[in-house]
Image 1 (cartoon, rainbow, N blue to C red):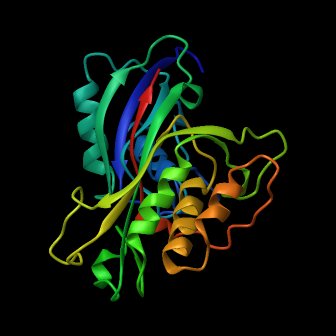
Image 2: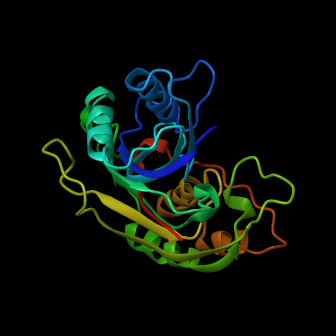
Image 3: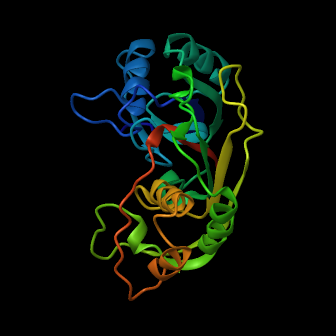
Length: 260
């Protein structure tokens, strides 16, 4: 690309009606919608997009970033450019900030310290309007046992049993800095249930479906279908244990990430 200029674009979105972040043929995605909007407001301009995280279908983000490489310099008109983007993007995607990228930036490698939150409730079925924001598990859950079990994920472990489509050579030994279940005080709406909860997970990076499979395992513990000891063994290198439940995607949000 002639005359490359690099920018970091911070974005938030509700992923409920999208097939994830990454552009896919014949699918409506966050990246695809952003590309379509860029082509509309900057016809004839060449650009490249690299996402700092590849959220799955129906997963949302409070704060995510992508690297925008353009053939045109934006210095002096970033605010105007951001305004044009927000004016033309659909209402479930919003640009938060645009800043100049440092030399040598590779946002895929340089994104670390990611924080995810998973909102959920249990008991009676939720109001239908909750569907984009919160998973609902009907029936009772032993929340105290789930909270205790969540602590097992903290630290450095082998997470090969907590990912889908494990590839040869994939780094599975990863560190989870924080994993706790608390009452939800972050997200509220008049149609939310009286009580709801949030699983918060922080780490340098996660594999595909890892958070959802961790949440799924905790739900099975809460239902009494899986013993916490099984979760502990599943984090050992030599163990091959199938986690039979992946939590729904619509309760998962990328809350934040940092760039080194």
